[in-house]
Length: 638
Image (cartoon, rainbow, N blue to C red; front, side, top):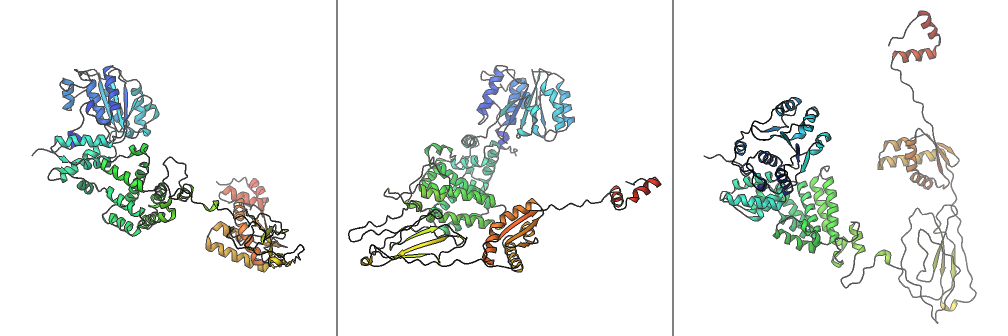
């Protein structure tokens, strides 16, 4: 029975022309050989499985070939090429630096370099995984690499160029290998399948190429796996999905359609089916975010080329991207990024996925994109779903949808002959950015600055005037002021029939007395202070806050004085001060309460460790100890 040889070895490129996806490297190397411009040291770097070691071997074989072709390729018939093919060449040496990374290994290599080749022009040394060499080995190799013999050429290969010493990099001609494009990989797999008499669906080969992530060796290994599975030597798309454990595009399209329709139950059932099939939840989150990214690039014809999928799947992406609003895709990517970052730290990871889907299913109602135009991909936006919905929103008939900030206040009613204009001696001042506006019955409100820091909304002066009734008209109502706002409002109300309006009117003003500040005792202050400290501990148990709140208090009139130990405590007090003052003023009914502090740095007591420290401490308390030591001629035992 013939031994099986994996495709990665059986179809390993033997010439520069058969190398897949690295034309920029192979063209340069062939020109260097034809023009005899060969460097003394080459460094091939790039991801795994892209052809670094293969190109190093082809270069080594071609350099010593005795009958080069006009294209600069090896002939494969001369003595040097035949010995290389049979792994019997004395001029080409390979060293695996992963297992031979010591100084002794490099010294043995340097000893071999001293001897010129017996046949051929060059001795080539291929050092694979060169980044695994130790620092001492690199330093030992440095001098030989800088000034090698004329017949010695070094080819270094690595996947991690950043781990190599800069002094080594500066002495090498560096070639960066690229990840191989999925199209090149699928074409190469199709050629191998035809040579092996294997029938393969194009979608299946494209799926293998995408899963390989730019590595041809990985793609060939997955190809062999699926060939082994297919007893009838037919590679099918569905079987590749199962063998490689890949989540099908259909799940992503189906789930996106459910979310666009706001069908949350179906979305949750689809995710449950995915997880029951054994797919990792984090893998699903990353894949679904990638799906939204692909939908986003389909929004503009200039970026569709970034989509690396088959033509059938490309059409599905274009169709679904036309249905998905831009605001939905941006919000989905933003929420998906948060879910991706928080997934590993979450106790219930599945709940994080379901919460993400719940938010996406509800975006239809939040954004109301049925009445929104489609925003261009290159438009100016900040990525926020709400701002996108408001900034670019228009009705289907082309009329703009007014935003809350665009709603203007109605103009006051224009006076007619039957309703003469009545002038009111009222002064209006803006408060918190709002100006008082006329009410439905012709009344107006004026807000004045507070005089004693108390709120006097209910006890404001009231002015009553006669005026003709005006038909009620809807108007813009400013937002309600916060309860803690300290304002003094004067409200002028007018009422009465039109016949009662005369040139001289009587104005009645009623002023209510303001509430006086109450006095309080130190015990009342301490009780309220302790209550506040307990509430803060329940809300946010921060030790440094509690240290500040548990300081001794000194009451000087209405001023509370604290003594703190350091500036860190001052920062915590400054942060707590607004809330603490508001609480104490409200509970003790006194607006004059103030909090002051001073910092007294505590003296750090020096610790006594050594015998000398103990002697100095005792001598400081009893100076006669110095005299005793001198008389007895004693020394401190260290």
